[in-house]
Image (cartoon, protein in one colour):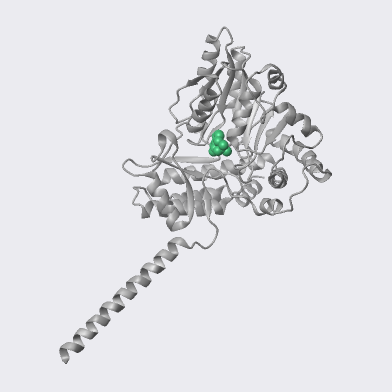
Length: 432
Ligand code: PLP
C-alpha cells in the first residue's frame, strides 16, 4: 500500500517535471520565433523604408500612358538630378543595380574594348565579371579589400596605354563589401593627368544620398545607382546618369543592347513616359523619398551619415575590434565592416544577434565571407536607431562569446551627446 503510494507520487512528479520542461521549451521557442516590435534591418541595404515612402507606394496604380503619370515623371526627374548633383540626363530602369551596371557598359562600349577596373572588393569584382561576360577586355587591378581604388596606380596604367585601348575606367565609389570609399575626384584627376580619353564610370549604389557625390563637378561620364540604399526605397529601381561625352560614345558603341538602350528611354522621358511599363508604385515612392532628402538638405543628409558612422567606429574601437578599412580617409559613412577575432565565425555571431534581438547585420561577402560582419548605418536612420543597433551588436558579442571589451555603446552615446545639436548650440552661445 505504502509502496504503491510512493510509486504513484513519483510518477506524478515525473509527469509534472516533463510538463514544466515542455512549457519552458515552448516559451523559449515562441520567444525565438514570434518577434514583437520592428525588425532592425541593419544590413547595408536594402535599408529601412520610411513610413512616408511606404504610404506613397501604397496608392492605386495608374495608367502609365496617361497624364497623371506624365506629370509624376516630369516632377521627379529634376529632383532626381539634384540628388546626383547633375544637370545631365538621368534614366530610371525597373531593375536592380546589376541592370544599371550592364546598361552603363552596353550603351557606351564595343566588343573587345578594354575597361580598367580596381578590385576594391566583392562588388568591383562582380562588375568586372559582368563586363567580361559581355565580351569586354577587363583589366582589373588587384586590391587588398582594405581601402579604395588607388588613383596613382590608375594614372600609371593610363600613361602606359599610349594607344588608348582603354575605353573606360570603372570604379565603385563605396565598396559595400568592405566599407571603403574611393576618392572619385582623385580618379578624375588621374585620368586628366594622363590626358587619357577613357570614360569614367562610377558605381554609387551604396553611396548616393548618403555620402557626397557630384556627377557634374567630378566629370563622371556614367553614374550607376540603385533605389534600395540611401534613396530609402525598396529594391527594384536603378539609374544611369549620362554625360554628353557618354551620350556621344553611345552613338558608335556596338555592344548589343535593347532593354537598356538609352536612346529610346531618353526620347520617351522627354514627354514624361517610358518605352516599356515602368515600376509605377516605386516611382511614387521615389518622388516622396526625393522630397524627404531635399527637405532635409543634401549637406545635412551627408553630415548625419558622417556623424552616425563616426559614432559606430568609436564603438567598434572601444570593443577592441578591427575595422576592415584601414585608411581613415576612406572610411565609409554608409556602413562599417568589422573583422571577427580569429577563430570566431561572423555568420554564427550574426545568427545569435538575429535569433535573440531580431536584428539583421550584413554578412561578409566573397573573400571575407565568415570573417567579417557589416553594420549598415545609411538611409532613414537616426541616433536612437543607431544606439539600438549598437546595443544589439554588443549584447550579441557577449552572448556569442566573442572576445571584446564592453563599453562600445557608451562610447558611441558619449560621442552622440557631445556632437548633439543642443551641445553645438550651447557651445556656440558660450563662445559668442
Ligand atoms: N554595387 C554595389 C556597390 C552594391 O552594394 C550592390 C548591391 O548591394 C550592387 C552593385 C549590386 O546591386 P543589386 O544587388 O541591386 O543588383
